[in-house]
Image (cartoon, rainbow, N blue to C red):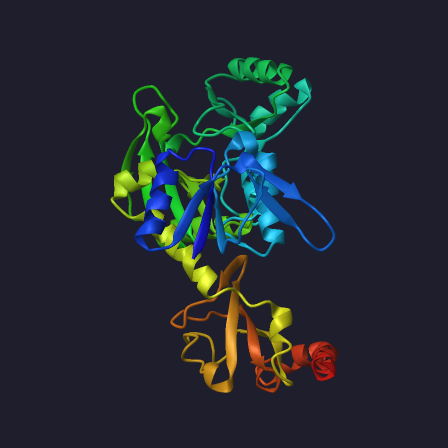
Length: 397
């Protein structure tokens, strides 16, 4: 695999470790300064130049885009995407996660646990907003802060008003957020790669500091996450449209409270704390995606007459409930499960040993006739025109 790491900090720990892990696995790897690209656009031929020379072909790109260059960095990543180069994190995923308000809006809609948060502009709305999030003390956050920078604790309503007024006078957009007292200056960082949490640590603030970030002097310790915390971390990463992310969660009374999803999580703190080769896990994941890329559904439709894509619903009382995907013997009917939908959770390429539950939906590719027999009669009648249309399009090719 030929890999490009996009980074403006080649000597940073994370960049060096990723480069080292790629070389240990005998991949070609090069660190490219994100700001040294030129994006060229012409009809049907998107391309990139790097340091005034046309960029050679790369199999994959791992973006490490700093907050200060988000706009240009995501434009470069988007250009790689248009050139059909695999990107470990997409431009829209990076943009979603980089804006704290935007990310919380998206997560809120998907019923993810969050500290209660408010965003206001008018001075008259500040006091009601503080009351709605639970009153003082409150956390005040800059929308585009990182590593604990731009995160303030206001002990009183008066202090909160003064801080917000000052920041708004400097054209800064701020969030007002409930202070989760039971977290006691602690938070969880889960490092997600693909659909797995590969490492996790608990960060504990020191002294009078309420921010637990390692960059703020916080102490880190390895932690074994419960299934609820692991599922929340993976689900948030997928909702944001990311494949590699650090998910920060508070330990609330009602379970995980997600603070942030970081698209360029640092490796030094969590590798030092856990002793795990997280850089290697990232590289292995990218290599697997390059070796076995997702096949476009449109390509699948042209394979053979009678084959296509369909959705199978698993209702209450179905024989599939309680069986693993392997036990359903879908493979024997020439049907492959591409994606499992469980409530708001999306599980691409689910493992054969995963047990099915009532209400699951399976996106499958295979023999249409075999899949028709698995669709309940009422749903089959409703969907038949679409299936016939699919058959016609295949026959015409």
